[in-house]
Amino acid sequence: MPRPEVSGQREQDGPKQDDPKQDDLSAVEAGLDALDAPVHQEPPRRLRTVLFNVLPPIAALVVLILIWQALWASALWPEYKLPAPGEVWAEFWSRASNGEVLSIIWTSVHRAVLGFAIAVAVATPLGLLVAKVPIVRAALGPLITGMQGLPSVAWVPAAVLWFGIEDPALYFVVLLGSIPSITNGLVSGIDQIPPILPRVGKSLGASNLAAVRHILLPAALPGYLSGLKQGWAFSWRSLMAAELIATSPALGLGLGAYLQQGNDLSEMSMVITAIFLILLVGISIELLVFRPLERHVLHSRGLTGAMAK
Image (cartoon, rainbow, N blue to C red; front, top):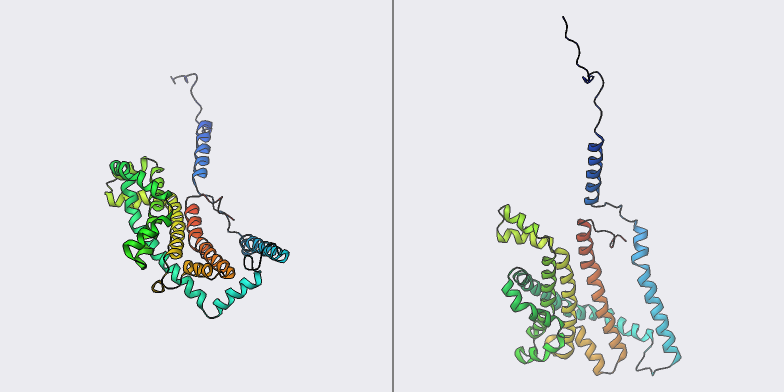
């Protein structure tokens, strides 16, 4: 005789139903993956980029010149204290037409770039030592921070006495002005690295050099880049202070010497022209070098909100 069916046996005819808990878990995982993935935004249109990046500075410059012209026309100060914008333009054009402006700028810029490159080569290993070796941090950390706050002009008399009025004196001032900032920037970037990253590299068998190259420096890049920007600013200001004080025909005519020359001749048009050229170099380095680097670093980490425009 056939056996009777057991009560409560499941029906095998219908399809299996999906587990709602599994669906919820998949949705959560998809949401987390979407948060981790960098947001790819369409690049802004060229016209919008030009309008946003070019027009506001030009408008601000025009307003500044108009205010300057109005102050000159009011004759509140004598001509030798506040020259007209046209007189400053005439001084600039007379130097630019014969190529002297390019020579003056190059004399200072090549010193600043070479000094900054040497500072990066010195400060990078120094920052790694300070960040990773506790005894080095205890010994040199306060000294480096104190040197960062020391005005660079304080080193100029000592540099002149040690090296004479020669190029080494200028480079010495540039190095002491920029190395502390680069070092502290790298130390700050390494301190903000999640501790799990070096441990993962060590567990994978990475050597000390490989860990520095592939883990520490890439992970500390935002802080390191901030230190580089500040180091460049300090090196540029240090060079201008050194060129103002240590003037000699053997050093050539740089921007600082040109500024001091205008002061010696009581020519305010030369002074303002020199200030304008110093500012122009600083803005150009920021826009052509550090701004693209910062945008690339932020974009590679999905942090494009601050630099999207």
